Length: 180
Image (cartoon, rainbow, N blue to C red; front, side, top):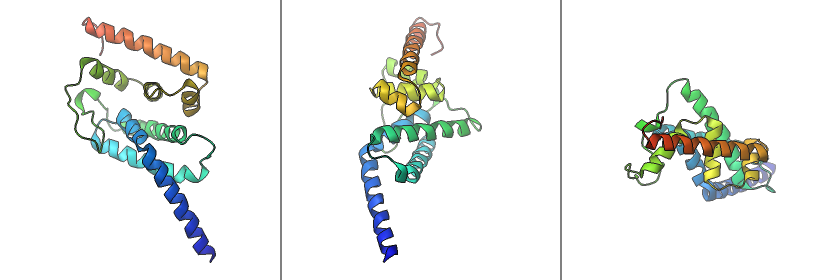
């Protein structure tokens, strides 16, 4: 009888997890696409993120936002994944496709500004990539701070520095003198 109750509780937990995961699965793919350009790396990272989410789910505080929780875990897993991968290979945005797994192929003839943005994001360190991803997702500074373990002031400062750096480098590129 006790084993049956335990199995029912596990089944309920699994159903809840799968339902929340289905609702928020795009977050996983956005994070994976931000940190990996090769489709097999994106798939591997997405699987690793889902595995970590499942392992951590029993400790999820339901009084908090699930999307904030998923971003926090997904970004931590992605940063670790990239650190491990970078020991073996360099990831180059210029040479890889930009499509998300499970979505139709996108036209690689993207507008010039979008390609510049991809290149800019690709040269950022993992923390600044995460920061820019969350900012572009229009997450409030408070939520970004919570996800990344920073203060709101630090988030605002880092975002302003990224904006200045991005506009400076993209302007330099248009004039033929930039890195991008």
